[in-house]
Image (cartoon, rainbow, N blue to C red; front, side, top):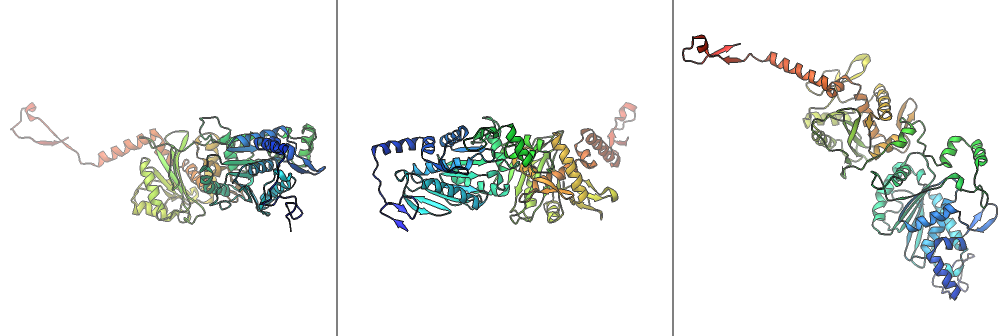
Length: 550
């Protein structure tokens, strides 16, 4: 019910659209001060609910004041804060200032769950209700998922997903607890939303969270904390808050060692490490140790195409390249992926990669062949558990690419790799079948290669897959909601490095020895060649050239 005479909506102290307010001179001065300084506005006019004291003025802590100023002065900010530090409430207060004192601002509050996003919006609505009427804008729309103000500004609440704000134009986006959004959803979200964000010159993205493993939030945080000019540096301004900068309770003393010990006793040291010290702990039981995952760096590709081919290093003469291939059905789920490895010498280096989840298995061999030809007729090893067998056959037979690796079953020795030349026996096959022994050995070798810096991987998608490649039962695979297609390509390469045939192709001394043996074999098989003899030297020349076998 609307009470128009007072300018209220229902029982709430909300100004109706179209209701004029006469400002006093003092209110005009205050309005201008609030518009200019968000910290002043928040501390003087924003009220929040305290568990112990009820409704109280919002007195910003020092780190909260720094957060407000940083967000106000920069387009892109990322904040890593401990639990129970008032991060969401601080951003709610700032966004309220942003929409009140700017016209036609579209703001999105996005969280890992829609219920959480709506809860954040409800807190903003609560603070709005306790503003004096002369500071309010008239209400056009007011519900659990959105509000719209008379000055044209609008705020919506939704879950973080690729479809959350697709097609809209937003001036500011708050990504709350972004570390808790699954990586695949976070990737889809940024792929669909970033063009909208980058279209403006003053649009803002505010990313705040407590760490939750080495995921997309970690990727953006690491990029934000790199030095200018360093590979992988992004435009985000980092904000970091330590657990001991936060009071034990509103208005109380800072958290101390005693509080820390009590918290650990009631939870665990690992939980405290992640939620209060804000350490980026990796997923539990990852193939690669968390310590190593933390220091892996990604580089910027020299070239990227829309189909998913990223090149980090162009092919060079006299280098030995290998491509290991994982295949999907091209139905938008798992990816068809391959990696290109320079295996000329240790450390091996991943110089290119391909990843696409819509490419048809019929077209995939053409892509593989083009890249393999470019990289010095690279040896190609294809995983053939499912549709991969068809890919291998098309590549070798239809496209006549000869350097497809074969494997042969050798009894207890299992599958043994060989070249793709000549015919196939009943025990041989193009490619390799990823059996449990193959995967177990490949994972073990891959762990050793990466942790001992014998294989250099600087691709961000591959590193993200390694972060979520975890132990499950008696094997390793992608964590729920993630993929492992690039990692499995690396597992195949790691398995390949233990094959005698691979060693013969990459060891310079062995290559020379094989080459010399082949030359001798060829010479032995050729008919002896005749030489012209000058019989005059022997006093028997009769004026005709003659051939003699030597």
